[in-house]
Length: 406
Ligand SMILES: Nc1nc2c(ncn2[C@@H]2O[C@H](COP(=O)(O)OP(=O)(O)OP(=O)(O)O)[C@@H](O)[C@H]2O)c(=O)[nH]1
Ligand SMILES: [Mg+2]
Image 1 (cartoon, rainbow, N blue to C red):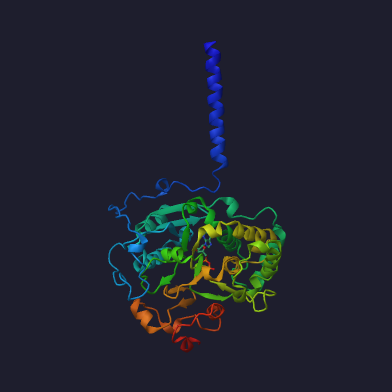
Image 2 (image 1 turned 120 degrees about the horizontal axis):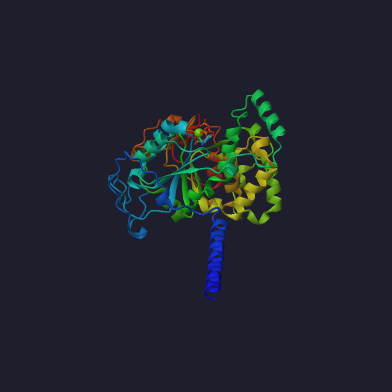
């Protein structure tokens, strides 16, 4: 009798643990990971001082947006006030280490040394020790390193490989930039549909994308993440321009199909006028340049955005053409967000080869201690779409813009 009871108890325990294991496996797909465990610490790390926690109620520390606001000139030491649930994010290869080191240094010097936000690095291969050591030594917040799952960096099974290969050969002949590259296509698809649901990213609500070899030319006096949260912004940009039409020949057809299938996802006060000059019939190729982005991860993880990505992905243009993540994000933001949710950061001065955003207006540049050449500012030149953005939103262009048109 006693041994029968013991057997029942054993069966019950086994059943209980099996259910427990099954529960965790089936619920873990896009869950966050424990960041404390994931943090890389170099054996030679010199970071010994723990950072003082940022404290304070938002209302006690209003954002210093202009030189007249308290705290604007206080650029030394840890910034007071609350922090948002946000992270920097970089997709990179090990060979990008010195180029991303330059970018991190800029971001830290101009902003993050006072805010200490985390930084997530993602790669389709394991990061090597040099990459981790160098980047961890430069970032003032915690660093995390994620390896991308193969299904987020490969051809989906519905893609016809021969057709995709022919496209690459044809684009190579036509000398379309990155037209023959498979990895560039995986990169664009990953940035369009997967970076925001990597396990590490599930821990955060806002992201700031940083690429290798960028420059930041002005001090950032307030927390742009907090600005986004407090102002109800979901997506932001510093540079906008026209896409190379040969890379996205059918992207707008796919978009129109999506609009037809999902009218419920289209925002009532959308930015169609930024994207199209004929009420949505054709795409004018305007997009926000996505190598810089501060945005809401929750929005990218929303049903609206995921439905859009999945619809595009099924159409195959990431491989049958060379759809970039910039037009994909921009069309999504333009159609599925209200205009008030998209922000142009005039005060974040930025360079990614070959374009510069240098704030218009000498006073702004001096207040922000900028070191960019205003002649390089791309905003009002013919190939930029930023004028359209201003016009669509009825915004006044900053003083002096007329002198920067060519
Ligand atoms: N892990 C990984 N990262 C990549 C790969 N290709 C590109 N990236 C990263 O993806 C981002 C965009 O790639 P870039 O090569 O900068 O593309 P781009 O900005 O269109 O072109 P550039 O003008 O060359 O900068 C960068 O952060 C790269 O480091 C890849 O094959 N593997
Ligand atoms: Mg780049």
